[in-house]
Structure formats: structure tokens, C-alpha cells
Image (cartoon, rainbow, N blue to C red; front, side, top):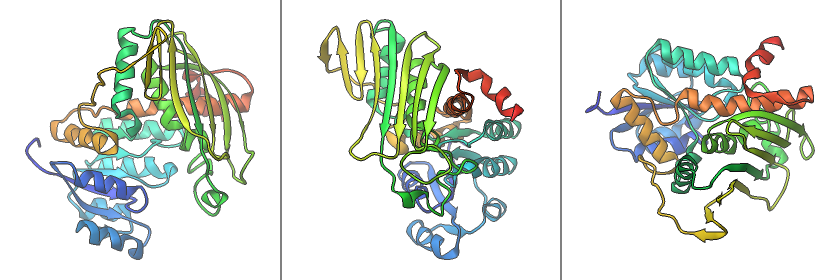
Length: 333
């Protein structure tokens, strides 16, 4: 369908779904035609802004609209149900992060997309920045030397009301700071380095009343032999996030590149489709039109979920967990 406009729907059109709609609106070859929200009142502004048809049930949207693709922007633990239904209807799916909160659900999404020959993508828009494409290229070229350490810190604040009477922080719908906030940076670490092999984690709930963790510290062993850490919380004020790679010949730290102790100003590598959420959606629209996998396919987006679930298992079992153990561990529980 390379010359046709991709007819796009947003499931969960309020909240961050409106960011998807704005991005789609800015992409040539795509048109927002419909969306869903929980009530007619809440979908009305979406209808007025985009001239789109509003629904309160995603099944009605899939049945009544001739859609090519949807973005799934509902609570994380509902993604698989919606994505599988869309795939069965022949509709391509771009899911917000994480794909879902249990591996069995994620795999159902991937299997449904394969079975119905539709594209499945997962949102990790923080990959789509020139400095990160540059850092990944430098790792692949060996410009940092042998990678010894790779770390991320995600030190954010969420008020208690974020978790009160809502899906945030509930295990079946969300998870804690690792699954909801830090997963962006877990994805960056594994993507930049080539993969995470083993985790040793401690988690705690220290600053909020919630079901899941708001503090996590994870020791990492990467597939390339490097070591690293994840430190994450939603309980502090004044904190920031960072991603850092350290090798025998140089380092990268959230925009700063160093070679042999000297800061350098590299020629940055631009993502081929543009930056941020708009860039990732532009790539997904291209994948639909060109019948190819998106840059962040469902299988790619699965990796970060698997790492987080390995960290959860490690914290519960009080031992190191290899990432490839996760499916067996989940099947036993």
C-alpha cells in the first residue's frame, strides 16, 4: 500500500494518546481517523481536534472503522488484549511501552501479529535521538574500546495521587518504577550494548503506598562481558536520568562523548526517520506502507520487558537470574 494513506486509530486517545495523535498528524502518508476513550465526554475533545470519530469501546472501533493501524495507549496490562484483537482484524499495531507486563501476554501479541501478517511495534522513542544513534554506532565500531561498564540512573518524582485509585503501581496493570518509568532506559542499555545477560536486583516500596516497587537497584552482566547497574526511583525530588557507557578508550554520558580523556564533539548520526515520538511513528507508518518490520519491532520491544521481569524474579528469589530464565520462572508461578 505504498501510495495509500495509512488510516490510523488511537486506542486510549486521551492522555499520552494525544501525543500519538499529534505525531501521526505531522507524518506524511498517515491520517488520524478514529479513537477511543472511556466515556463520550472524554472522547469529545479528541473528535473536535482531529475531526475523527470517537468510540468508548475498542471492539466497536475495530469493527466499524476501516483501519490500517492503531496505537495502543491504554494501561500497560491491557495492551495484549487489544493488540491481539487488532491483529485478528488485520490491523497493524504500535503499542506504548511496555508491550505488556507479563511475558506470556507479550508473546501472544507477537504470535498474533505473525499469524495475521501484520506489523507489531513497541514505543521506545528515547532511542530516536542523534546522540544515542551515535553512541550505538561507536560501540559497534569499537571506538570506546572494550566496554567495561554501562549504567543508568532514573531518579524521578511521582506524587502519591499518581498511584491512588488508578492503575499505576498495580502489578497486573502496570508494575513499579522498573516497568513503568525505567524501562525506557533499560531498553537503551540493552540496545546500546547488544544485550543484557544476567541481573541481580533488590526492590523496595519506600516513598509511596502502592503494590509495586518505587525503588530498585539492579546489578547487570551484559552479553559482551561488561558489567553495570540500574538505579531507579519515583520517590525523590531534584533527581535526573542518565545513561552512561564506559570503555577502555572512551565514554558516553548522556550527550557527552570522551575519547582518551578528551571531550569530543562528534558528527552526530541522525535517525533515518527523524527524532522522538514523531520519528518513531514516521518509521512505523513507513513499515506499514512498505510491508517491512519497524525499527523497534515487537521482538525488539520484548527484550526490555524480559530484563525487567528478570529483575523482579531476582528480587523475589534473592539470587541472580539469567534473562533467558524468565519464561520458565513465570510458567512455574
